[in-house]
Image (cartoon, rainbow, N blue to C red; front, side, top):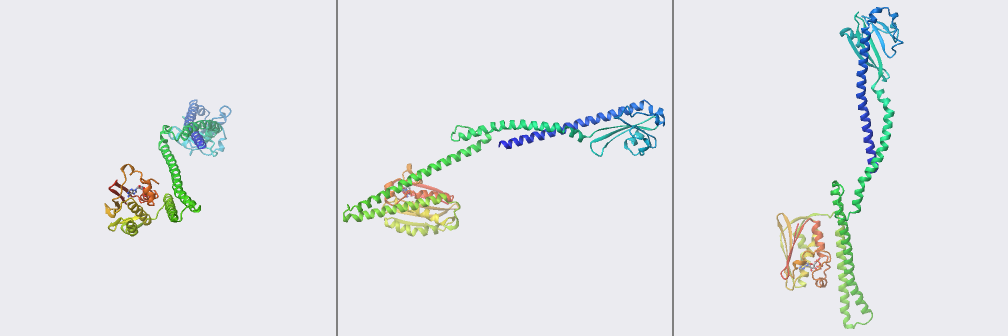
Length: 440
Ligand code: ADP
């Protein structure tokens, strides 16, 4: 960043210097040209007023100007354009001057002027011609530097100034960047301090975003820590039980008639472990999953495929399960939706009472496919309802464990609902029952 600012600042300074020098040179050169032309005109008119050339009257040998005025070239031209005298050359060596614009103008209007560039571009020659009283023309001319050579003669000084400015710019831009960056560095150091305001209001959206991302990262890290702690705890309980029962059996301290009970307990805890591990693997799969493949499917069909198995499960616990509804087209992931139905229905069976009911309905409402799982079981107290979708949160821990619950079912449901961009609605009252609806 420092280098970029340095280069830009120096670049701007160089451009500014070149533009200024070029502008001043053009203005100065124009003034200089005006001055040269007016000096030439004055000289030519002065020479005319002396009537010197009329007095010599063609006897050009008498004329001698070359020693006195070397910067000024004087040419005297006859009425037919023949050069009668030139203080720089011999008259005979010069061609007819009638076609020179300044001479032509002087014959026509009394005065004429023109500027001609030299071949080298280094100099310009300025001409001013006046008509003398005897009909001949007197021309004064002088060489002056061209605009380009004036500019070039300033080049060394411009170069020097540019070097100086570069040095100053580097120092200033170093100071500037330090000043600019210091508050940003301060902000980075105080990211967690919510009272710390960003030094520039332009940085507000940036700092807000970084803060919220920072908070997200912290809370995700905390959630991961909590999850790991919960998982370890959840796994430890059945493993400790299995180890304890196995130890008892191993030490031959169990009466023959009781052994069966211990075997069953070991089996039950092992099943619990498997269920837990399956749900944990599922949870982390859902956490990782990016692009879930969606397909055009029928919600009613998917639910009916689960209903049979669920009904058997329900009847084992003396609960009646029914499915009602009609075909409901939906774009989603079939396996995930079946998993969602099974989790909701298992809960409706698990947290029910003997002789209870589970009603599953599928319908279309305002163009949306709606799945509802209702039971007349134990219900959920209002104070607990907002927490039941959290990982490992259980209202009645012992009942959940006794019935094979892992505490992850609704967390998986919530995940699947989010993946499908659907909405969840929970309506429950203790002793009355629970209704959970998913609006796809
Ligand atoms: P679990 O494996 O313990 O059932 P869930 O995440 O599926 O875990 O559910 C979380 C908690 O929400 C359950 O432990 C239970 O207390 C409560 N719950 C879920 N569904 C119902 C329901 N239909 N009726 C009563 N309570 C329920």
